[in-house]
Amino acid sequence: MNKNPQKPNQNSKNSNKASIMGFQIDPSFIQAAEHRPKSTISDAGSIPLIDLSPLLHHDIHSDPSDPTIPNEISSLITAIGAACRDWGFFQVVNHGIDPQLLERIEAVAVEFFALPAEEKRKVKRDEVNALGYYDSEHTKNVRDWKEVLDLVIREYDDGLLVLKNRWPEYPPAMRETCEEYIAVVENLSYKLIELIALSLNLPAKYLNNFFKDSSSFFRLNYYNPCPTPNLVLGVGHHKDSVALTVLYQDQVGGLDVKRKSDEGWVRVKPIPNSYIINVGSIIQVWTNEKYESVEHRASVNSEKARLSIPFFFLPTFSTNVKPLEELVSDENPAKYEEYNWRDYFSSHLGGNFKKMDKEDIQISHFKKTTII
Ligand SMILES: O=C(O)CCC(=O)C(=O)O
Image (cartoon, rainbow, N blue to C red; front, side):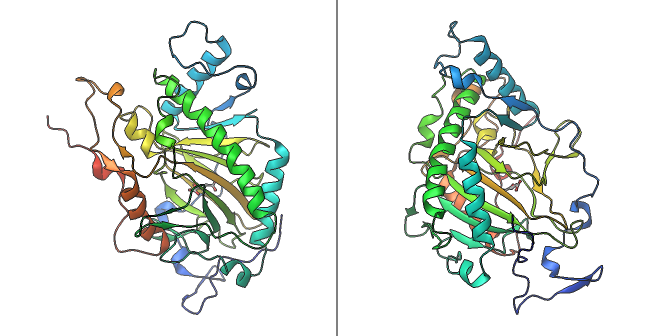
């Protein structure tokens, strides 16, 4: 890991730096007092840990009421259902992805972010095509203390929304390693979505069709050390608007999750070769809130750079997202109006690109009002 990396580009001519605790910090990074992270955040009582090793020995049966489902798989389905309901987050081990591939993807990512700023800017995101390198992303209108490289698994261009990968020339192994990685992490995402479908008493492959020609994307997040970690966030508090996030992180730690039971922040303890899975807003709508998308954020620290690699598992852009018929009833009517995934996704891009005067569109905007 590069121990002396460059800061997010706060040296640009436009930045008005303020002296904070003796450090020159661009004020656009500074979080409002109520969102600043405490330095004492604990990893005790954190998200459930689930062992996926039963999947290494058994297939996933398609019918949730099939009496021949092995006990180990039934227990796994129950554990995943409980984690989605109670936490919206869980951590998995024994997922079957080769640890050497994880080492290789970490290595190319670290090598890329250690390149000189001019080299990284050769693949910089712009207002037309939202993919590539970026160091000024905003979450809820506050700048994140991070650099990213965004890529999609399937390029897209409908004239208004353009998503074309910008592959860096260096490190030379970047493209091949990412493509190899994407294939296996997508496969893991399918297994997880099948277990989630079974936990909802739906056939295992019930949700799979939504992901045919998926709009899934893949991000490398790099958080440089920060002299004032109590004032900024690597990624501000947010909920993922995706179906499922499948995140790999290095051993530094910094992902904080808002615990549903008491709304307290807890740190996710890094476990070697594990993944952190969270339910996004699309699953929240599909399940009519049985499973909810939960707030999380990335804290930074003053000593070590941190790398995280989320894979955002997303439906095809033409999907109209609405509560699944099987999960609504007279007693539990649909809580959301239908929305189009492409339009929703596209409306978010501007807000991530720069500071805006208004908040991004959220699924709460599609929530039906209850008349009593
Ligand atoms: O780096 C992390 O652990 C969290 C990243 C995240 O929430 C995001 O990229 O949306």
